[in-house]
Image (tube, rainbow, N blue to C red; front, side, top):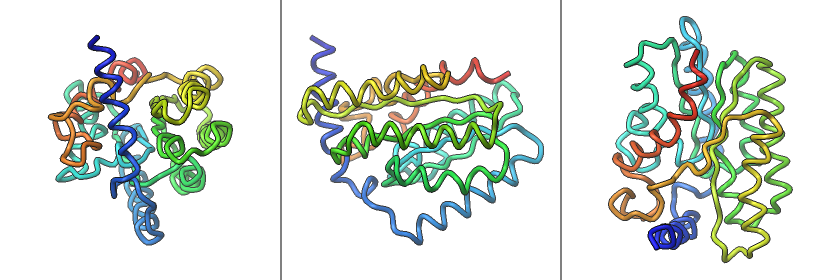
Length: 232
């Protein structure tokens, strides 16, 4: 019964995702600003430590929080620092990003070497009804670009879902995109990024969509067991 309730609340969450400003189309000026900021940050942090690039949409960017320091990539950084591991995390989340947008944006961020790549994209595609084959191809293209620029880079994929109102076939095929990619490219897989957060009122902001500070902590806990074994 609990699992059914969680599924229903998740469906409310994910259906609302596109109505929020955080997942709308991003203006060109904002995109260019983020690209320049991320590129400069990568170059600066690359000097003394290995780099983990978190590449996603508003969920990665920390939409609605006081700052990126409250988003899950920064919480992962805190865990890394507590263990005195030589890694810096780069938050390259961009609100409104789709897999097609990510495919174009990633080129700007591969000018400096990265050691671990965490990919969180696709949910926006699903809710727009973009063909699953297109989303798969776009995500695959992003991964190929990362592997070509950084052959030894370790890869992590964050899974998402769409509501069954999109149709059972679409729902199932979308859900299968992530394990399929993870298997094909030997990626570590986070089965569902928002596990134990999606649809839970007190863990989401007033929009009912984006995690609060406490929700982001749980998201970080979902990612950490998958990421930690890669930090050698």
